[in-house]
Length: 205
View 1 (spheres, rainbow, N blue to C red):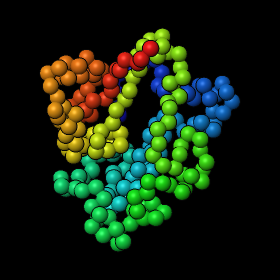
View 2 (cartoon, rainbow, N blue to C red):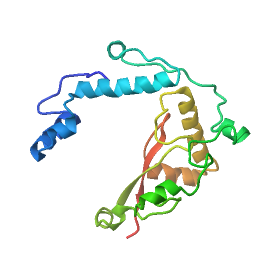
View 3 (cartoon, one colour):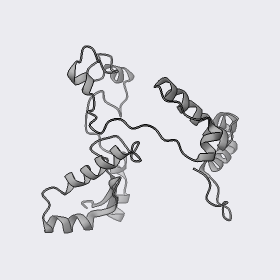
């Protein structure tokens, strides 16, 4: 993204701030790897271009991209079915898991022996639950996600927008005037393409 205006007063970019902190802590070179902010942008772009090439799509060189400001990727069919080939023929279209199937339990994750990352779906008490802040402020912010994807990696696509609207519609299904009034009081922010981004919920004392 191109800079809209020059930094005002003492405003600095995140990269500039973290580079200065790394310098004070004695590992500036390790953090920056000798690259400037623009160097990193070009590095990430060229890495993405290689991945895109492997998938059969050619991205323009970085200079052309930077002058134009964006790259358009072809979208798949609107009736795309997630894991459609796998569902039709699992043996001929295995997934990228060790077993080639959908795994509820991951032996690979289990081998890491992480205390905070079990190899199967599980509820883990959030670290912030032990904080005194909820008792003092009586508020907690919870960020939600879409039903059709992880994060917002496809929010700029037509399919992402449609799924976002569907997610919003699903969340409204069965609402009554009373529940809508309650939802309006709970909702902190929302947008058409990203649906509900977060809500403030009261925390029990």
